[in-house]
Image (cartoon, rainbow, N blue to C red; front, side, top):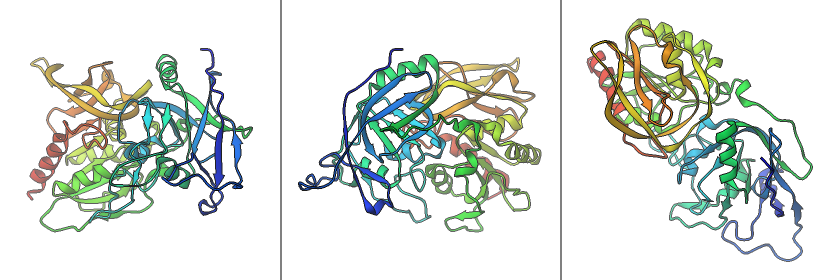
Length: 413
């Protein structure tokens, strides 16, 4: 593909409150007037450089700094505060295909009664960088307290706008997710492959903790945290479960629990071998287990299956998933039920590697990949999509109900 180039410049200022990290300035970035005459300004050349040689020139917002990572795209139309704080995006440069981003700003950071962030999926931005077609420095929303650019600048996360995201997305669909870098001026840096590193260890907690107030009349669930989204934890608590959050490598079998939940997270599931070994042990106990996203892949590996990297992944709020059932011959067949789901993953379970009493529970209607697995007789199941949504549809929230009911039934509470 012939590189696309936009001849534009960026005006940036340095905010001493950001500990030296440059903050993007775009006139009315925070709803105020431009700085007075005489304020020092600097012009910057900003480029998105792809591993295949394509170069996209645009304007900077957020932090004016160079960054490298894996370039992926998301087709969602809304929900960028939740998307940018999803730990599953760790190390990735995210391309938003929706043309206008930033017009409703960013809400204030707050915690609910259980100590969980409200409106965000973690305590901070997780993406390495953001690529958009048009960035709106002006925002309007009754909950907004700052612009997207200011929020990103405070976190040291760069953004580039003015990019033909349609052409970029077509390239990623045809050639697959690839390495890239946002380069400011001549501050070049080497390409970096985050999938070759242990990303889960970067986002997983370091210590065991409890969520909210635990009561004796509620069953207890171990949440194996590989980079869990806030909304997942909240969904478990709202269903009357005591939640004990443990690091993904933690040996938790000396604890008293009634079920196990394996969370979402970033990167290649093959880096989570210790977690897989623990889940293999857990399967022998027979207690209910639910895995979501990376958790589904870990569950599949513990069941004897294998995983592989998708060409460009599933990152959107409208992925159609068909529910499967088992016929009289023991074969998984499609039902007439199809659900619209929110997804963010770059790996999947190989259907032909499922063994014994395991079968495909959901199948992607677009490409036929595995979107969920289930055991025929025991309360073990996983889904590749996000039933908690945020952002996205809540059509499959019943998956949490199935798990909660199985845990309560098994515990007698």
